[in-house]
Structure formats: C-alpha cells, structure tokens
Amino acid sequence: MAYIARVDGTREAIKTPVSLERAQEVVGGYVERVCPRHSPKIVFLCNEDGFSKGLQVNAHGCELYGAPIVGCIVVFESRKEAKGWL
Image (tube, rainbow, N blue to C red):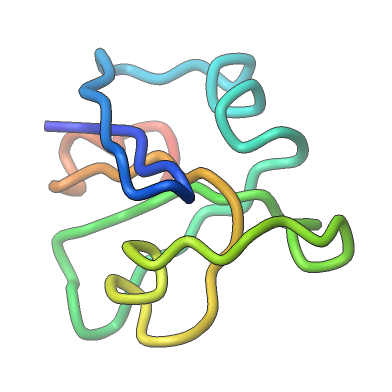
C-alpha cells in the first residue's frame, strides 16, 4: 500500500505507480527519495527543499526516519511498490 501522510496527521491511500508529477504535487516541489535505515522495507518521498521553504514538521515522517522530516510525504510500504523510485 502507498499513502500520503500530511502534516496534520491525516493519511490518504494513493494508487501506484506514482508519477513524478503527482509526487511533486503532493510534496509541493522537488522530490527527494528517502530510505529509512531502521525500516528497510519502507521508502518515502518528501520535498527536498522543505526546510528552506519553512514547511511544517511531519510527525509520521519523523517517526519513520528517526530525524526531522517536513511537509507532506508519499509513503510506500514496500520497495516493490516504490519501483521506479529506487
């Protein structure tokens, strides 16, 4: 399953594959792929300029990554779903 995790804590299922255009729409700009070390099956996409843009902290993203993540993110619960982003 893939989903959008918003900064307000809400989540929304999203169909895969996720196009670059859709990912940019969700994260609000340039897309950065993140592969958390402590969650090797998960891959997520975030805004690569999120800190400089002053985006809000995403608590779910921080939990997944173990470090600050800001803005809305697209989460793939398996590397198979993230095909094309690896």
